[in-house]
Image 1 (tube, rainbow, N blue to C red):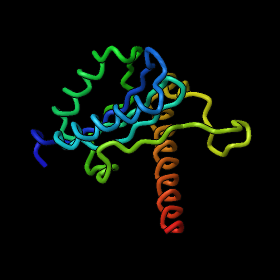
Image 2: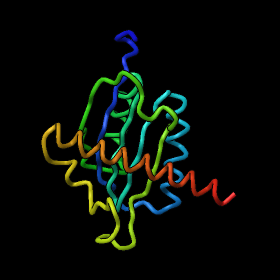
Image 3: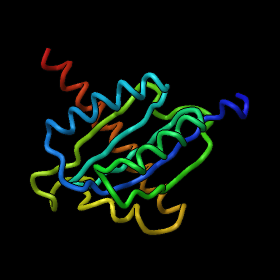
Length: 154
């Protein structure tokens, strides 16, 4: 891997200027997935009650250019880059935009439930890194469970 094509992992959070409904999220995901595939960007998007956390990975220049566009997008504000680090291999190689809505019927009883992403907005680099790894693991486990359930239904 040359420095011209070095992989970058970038994580940011933001607040929507207004809450997205399911149809708006579907449209956002569809356009993002198509654009990300064309740019060879992979990653993960989490959304909860007007808050986004997104992990982007790809060639450094491409990810940085996308982040500039995202920061200027009027659909959200308070955009904060939480983590920017070189990547030796992609963590989300199969996902142009993995997505999981973060909702729970009974927050106090739901394992892994998060009231917000506030802990990602404050704290040191190590704490943010640990929280992001937990979110990534949570997402992967949920995706695997949903795939297994879909296979059982067949």
